Image 1 (tube, one colour):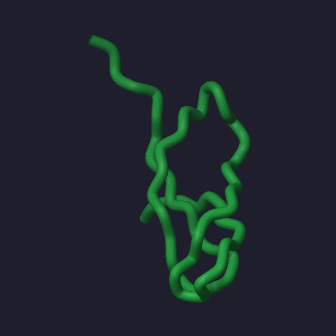
Image 2 (cartoon, one colour):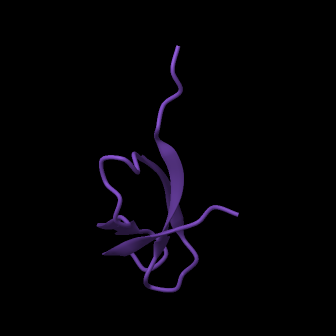
Image 3 (cartoon, rainbow, N blue to C red):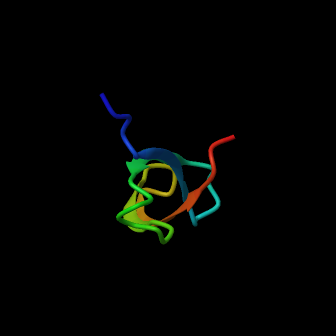
Length: 55
């Protein structure tokens, strides 16, 4: 059985609250970094989340 190509990435809030989501993405089908608008409960707004590395 083959391994999945999906990798786990950390989606960090651009509102500098330190809040993050953890998502999976396939680097073969989407080689660019992910960006998406999600809800940040610290500022209670939808803000842009950008992909960073998981340490």
